[in-house]
Length: 200
Ligand SMILES: CC(C)(COP(=O)(O)OP(=O)(O)OC[C@H]1O[C@@H](n2cnc3c(N)ncnc32)[C@H](O)[C@@H]1OP(=O)(O)O)[C@@H](O)C(=O)NCCC(=O)NCCS
Image (cartoon, rainbow, N blue to C red; front, side):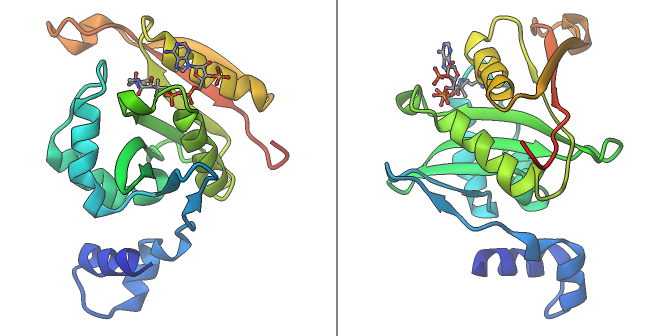
């Protein structure tokens, strides 16, 4: 909570202007959750950005963004980003945001689990955390992400997530290889999961 408060003051660029902190929505932060195996899930903090960069770098085929981009995500979108911590190390993260023109949707940008932690449902547990602390809390109806056709682990993770919550999942093409110029990037397919209602 102190970090959230300190960051709010930093983000607003002010000393004690409480109204600006409320405008930033920093008082709706969710409590961390510690699982029986010691895995701690919590919303991102600005201090996570450095480790987040290193985690994504270790998780191909994810595109590695700049350190500055991860700082902005952890600053401006902290409440829609989740990190997983084990033994004080960042071992998983989901970066997500609510698109300004699609305010009923949580868009998952990147999902990463450290190679040595895979297969322990860290990815699934981070999605469940986002569902409870963000999607339901904000009454959002859709969760979206893009996945490339060759990424079977991610496809399986998201399709099982939708199946087990009994919500729909449609897949359409969003970005073609040509949209990425000559970078030899695969197609990115849009997974649109929902609609979510309170009963899910
Ligand atoms: C995709 C990724 C996040 C999965 O994380 P994870 O913590 O290992 O996944 P989970 O243990 O939560 O598994 C959830 C489900 O996904 C599926 N899954 C996970 N890894 C899988 C794999 N390698 N092959 C097939 N299915 C897989 C399983 O069906 C699993 O369900 P189950 O437990 O009922 O069997 C992880 O492999 C990763 O970081 N990959 C590199 C980065 C990446 O591709 N990110 C996604 C970009 S869209």
